Amino acid sequence: MKAIRVHEFGSPEVMKLEEVPDLNPGSGEVVVRVEAIGINPVDTYIRAGAYAKKPDLPYTPGSDAAGMVIGVGEGVTHVRTGDRVYVAGNLSGAYAEQVLCREFQAHPLPERASFSQGAGVGIPCGTAYYALNFRAHALPGEFVLIHGASGGVGTAAVQLARAAGMRVIGTAGTEKGRKLVLAQGAHHALDHHDPAYLEAIPEITCGHGIDVVLEMLANVNLAKDLKLLAPGGRVVVIGSRGSVEIEPRDAMGKSAAILGMVLFNAAENDYRAMHAALGAGLENGTLNPVVGKELALADAAKAHEEIMASGAYGKIVLQP
Ligand code: NAP
Image (cartoon, rainbow, N blue to C red):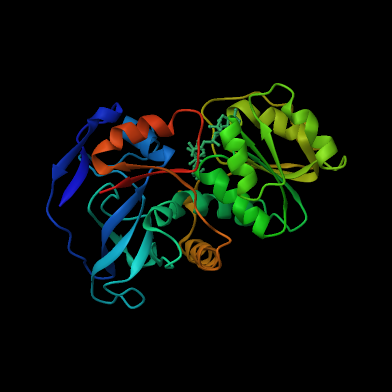
């Protein structure tokens, strides 16, 4: 089969399409024929050698995929050959024609979701769900600001928050992005490049303030987020690309919490609960991943450049 291989950390061009042996499932493992692969920003940090946890070289990138099960190992009970699945985390790397994962990493993909949508579930929807429910404990009726709502995590967060009965405000840097955010269910869409965009928050929240912020770029926004909070407000730091100075009194005076998260820290039981909920959302249509662009597997380098550019529009997906 063909797979992207990385022999040295560096620029996107270090990703090479190569011929590698087919995969065989060991005990408790599943092999999936990949129909679509989800590109995530973390794939680019790992490829560049800038991520805290580095894989041994050479390696195949990618956490997220969707496809058809073509082999199951001894002891696998919930997944069968021929099942449509999405894969959230794996053992062999998703940028390939086949992927090997543990049984709990393969989840049913309902017929109503395409393989490309399935490839957009693992990290983005998992992160959005984990941030809202496991970190912020967001409740129906609360005001949720999704700061960076036009990308993979943000569009999922808008859908999940709206379906759960929250009051949703999303931001995007382009007109197209803001239309997308509204179409996913946000009650309001703001432009994070407009210097005055946060002045609308007191009116939108009738003076209450924001209960929960899901923050995609904390180094730019954290100080501002703290000033927007309602009493007891929570900011979940999902993404950050640098350092930031904050006024600690803004948190103190509101009894606010700044909550970090990395999805990879989630326990196996949390993953099970999360994917049961995401599966239900895919089934009933309240979770409907947005696929903005589909590229060929050989275009992995282009996909890595595009995901780091501004003007996000849902997910970028590769197709083998
Ligand atoms: P993505 O699809 O590339 O989307 C990036 C988002 O950030 C877009 O909505 C973009 O909006 C927005 N953004 C750009 N400038 C912004 C600003 N000044 N203020 C607020 N938002 C801004 O990436 P993603 O997959 O959604 O991931 C988002 C971030 O979370 C990345 O940094 C990623 O590494 C991180 N992440 C962390 C975890 C975790 O476990 N902690 C998991 C997944 C992702 P425009 O392009 O419209 O300007």
